[in-house]
Image 1 (cartoon, rainbow, N blue to C red):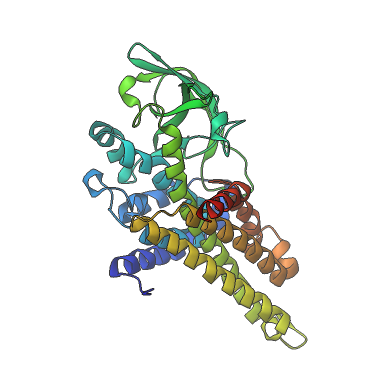
Image 2 (cartoon, one colour):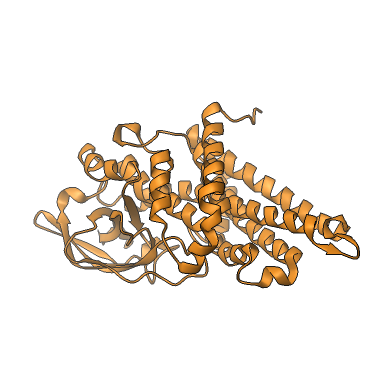
Length: 384
């Protein structure tokens, strides 16, 4: 097997590393403290091509592969996961469904302004009683004449209310199937549509430099042509979208885990106890070794799943495996980094304290560890 990256993949990884370490990491603590979306950083990322990496060149994207995208996401997350999730949710959740299922007219109108990264797009699935259980969706869309009229609410939607958000693709219940299950359909809602409002941004433990908030729809009417793909195909679109999203969140988790190891190594080399650096003690060396091994395993799982997506192979099981293992490995890395830093790490101003707060969400977003394990188990049984 050839594990060597292509020239283009090297370019994206190195460009992301240099930009993240120079432009993002020095401001990460402040962005977290102030809960601030860094529009200037996002604008620079758009200019460099990060905000449209995998999107079609015909609509302003860079047409890159998924492996290169995951490598870049890892490096951005290594500097700040909030900036990374803004990029990931915009590309994997917001724009990817438009690129895959949108008509030529929809791509020209909605995807083109976003593929460049000058505007953001959101994906509205989660509700009070729906998320992992997409069938619990209560937001409705009724076809009245030549308009879809949407009523309901979404929550935890990333990029839903930024200053540069152009709109959201909303998962709606448009009827009931003969088997009693809901008919789910994806519908495009531009940001300035009457009856569509955004609630205040959440006060979160992590991802504080990104935007998550509730969305509300009250007799929100959009043209019939705003239906994304076929009516009733929303659930299938959602599953396909989340497969790619899970791999991308796995890359975010790897980046955060690597940041934890970076801090742990720095502390192990400089902290003195009993007349020598704590890195000379076997107990600390074992922690570092375990962190490094798990991060390398997680990285390989993410890149394998990304490669399978690029080559057109089925990868749902591998996506779930990568997401679960990477997110849980990152949590263990954050815990060990905190332990190595000791009391200093427990202080809010320390980087490892910030990482320790941020790491948990990776086990929840884009499918919880529980539902992903269920997916893996079902697929193993089906294969058997």
